[in-house]
Length: 380
Image (cartoon, rainbow, N blue to C red):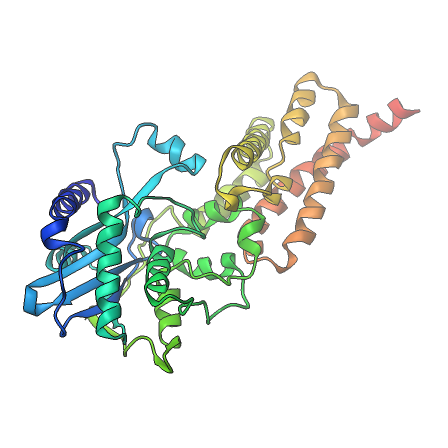
């Protein structure tokens, strides 16, 4: 979400909160009011790769057409990057006119789909009250979590709260992992796909039993029943744009493969050591973030078997020309790669990291062969 748009939305939200007594939670909807879930298409910016979810309240009798959006955050938050990494960044809900909402998505050329909820008038009023109470009281503020707490899960929670039952549950793709579910969203964004593959740990390899992405909610709503009828009506298309993955001369698998092939073929001491240094530093970063961050998706990151901090110790002994320890640490790193390969056999990101595994393996085997004879002599 762009800064200028966010400021406009926040201003409207503050106006709505201040006017709650006359417009918000005490406002009585007419019998013709409608409530619906909006699912917004993906975009090419990092914040829009997975789409968006919002709730729409429409009451033509009272000139109400509002969108409640649980995906807002303040760019001016002190230590923004550190808070986001730590998992302390506060997200919150805002409400803004439906026309503004549609103009923004039309400008960004992102599709918008609507699913009207089949619930009685009393529950529509209750949902409207819950949304406005949440907005005015600050209950809508939450600590963002990639899987467990986001714009989609918050919409699910407030609707289930209104229905006084856990009506909306995940009913599609529950037999595949979160990591597998995420993969198709990175079409045309190769390095973003690689980055999320290596920074996410064990949690995203669990079966995707929670609704955490907008289009998962859209698909689940097609099957959810409430009071012996489908909770949502047939999906309406409000805006539709053909999704065209971006083309980049560098953000693709070809530049990735070419880079690694050149490093392996050139086989120079400087490039090899720079490669191992980068892998080791990334491993230290993943290890540190896993302990530092509250994002459970970053914990227990077995990818450090590939991005192995022990590579830094190996470089130290390369600098010291200590052939015995070069041999020993090369064996250690190679053993870690073998274990890593076994772990990855049934994982979604095997193919994308396989070139890195091969590159690292070739370098380590070369070091083992070059230092084996001296190491044997030293042992004698």
